[in-house]
Length: 259
Length: 325
Image (cartoon, rainbow over all chains, first blue to last red; front, side, top):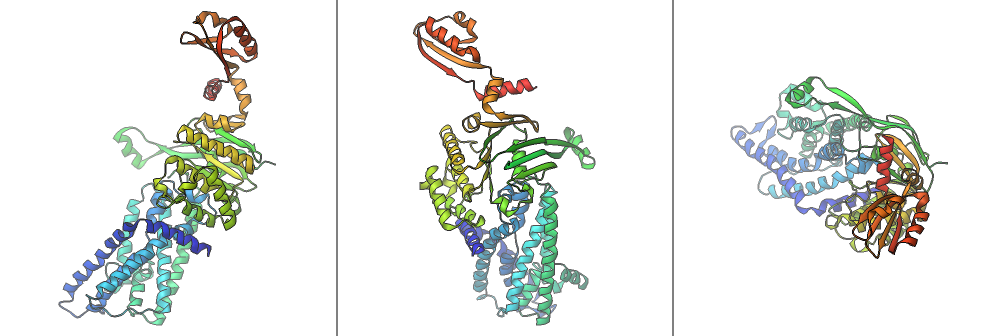
């Protein structure tokens, strides 16, 4: 109940600025819609590409609208730039509550509100674009929850580099590009050359966009779903430990006025 | 048993020295010369429960760094620090529930929500019982006269109102130890006085230990019996404010307003004299001779008004640092 009350209070804060969530949502919707238009040209000459029909590809990108807005954490801006770089971390360190958990409660309302916008847009667009229904099961719900946790812990961990680096912009921008390509935000990973898709399936990025997307499309077997969940848990554990390690050493470098 | 104990605390920061100009910038790409600066250098002191202590010194003296070490924000380079029996940097939950750090230039309040919502968040974070929370809020909002603004967006509040709410936000869990870093910075004179009155009352009522840093000498003068002077990371003085004033200001200021015009020369024998207008004079008189001089002037001259004052704390501090150098 205590955590729920803390989350509710953060919801109140996020809801205060009505236009903010909508503006960010518009940014997130443009990319998938442009890609749907792009693939329409490619499907004019053939009915399937790498096992995807035009309907499936449309569905994939429409799902990305929801997944992008809900599952991609943007906590790095807050942790790296505001808290560590500008010293706002002092506001958290004297409170008897874990910094990571409080940051999670700060970020989650943003994702949920964005997700609601995403679902609304998905339902609206599905009237105009032919798509098959999504497959909602306990496994797909679990995969989505783990996908967000993975995305959050990865972004939080990367942000801690700000304890050592003065300007994080370059690192975060490079990270963003890698994440976009290897998570399946640009194209489904099965479209990539075999060697590249093999790498992508091993790295964590695919587990917070691509695999949740194909699970919702019904393109995964139960055996594969189990594999996805195992990989997600494994990556969350790896990044969780890395976070703890970086925090342990990084916080000793923190000067309290910004790095 | 001291509630705060600091032994040989040292905190260093490393920064690189850049040679001037573009050549220096290019050189720094390949080779950098790092220098170590002592923000706090071998500082030791202890504080008893319930004390209200002024931690003062010029900019960059090490006041805030010490406060940050005491509140567990930064990791000391060396030395031992114990606050309420805990090592601050471990930031144990029980320790954090006993302390509070108010920084005049940082705030915890949500800007887009009324202050009450931020209070509710701290209530949950510090696990304060609802009935206790309500009592504390009622008491503190009345004491600080902010009852009417509890449901106004923080963004719309004045700096003083915001600072008061910030203080309430940090006191919700009734901390035993309060670190106040420049709490009156940027506030107008009336608001400064209000906050001072509140801090004094809070200290007396709850027997909380308060460590205060301030640039405003009035804060220290009005609130603290004991002060710690720090300069260039070292403690220069630790003791009673009154003792410091006596030691570094062996004079008192006597001001006389006369009913008739006077000449400066007539008063030079009593001490350093300064004439203000035709009929007013300010005398800097040796502490021991104050009574004698006052009696003599009152007897020999046609005095309209007469006051005896201690020198300003700013002058004492200036004198102290001049003597130290």
